[in-house]
Length: 124
Image 1 (cartoon, rainbow, N blue to C red):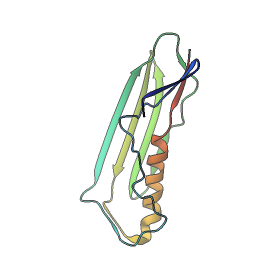
Image 2 (cartoon, rainbow, N blue to C red):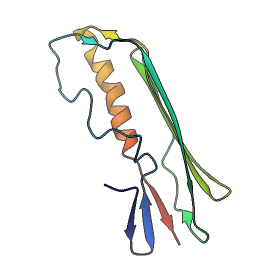
Image 3 (cartoon, helix red, strand yellow):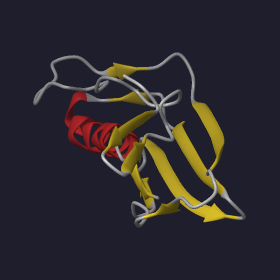
Image 4 (tube, rainbow, N blue to C red):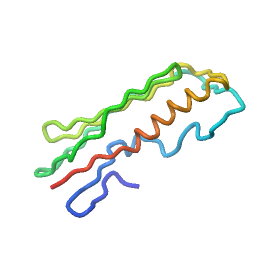
């Protein structure tokens, strides 16, 4: 994996390369045991990437704000003054969930995993 992948006169940039996950936390359709994190947590990150002259973004991925009782995932992109800015928040609010609540925890996990896979296309 790398932060940039050239495709002809285009470059695909993964601004969350250093921050994103490479696997789902809750990959299984069903769960037999409760979810127990040792404590709530909040991870907030911002990445700024200088964009070379004559390059421009071909559109940015949509911002996401997925929140439920289990946690929150938020990400956003902006290009301003020659800089691509990517911000990301991943938060576990409630560290203990019962098996019956697994679908909500899995939905939060899916939002995080899928959001982290978004990339930005640049053209010269």
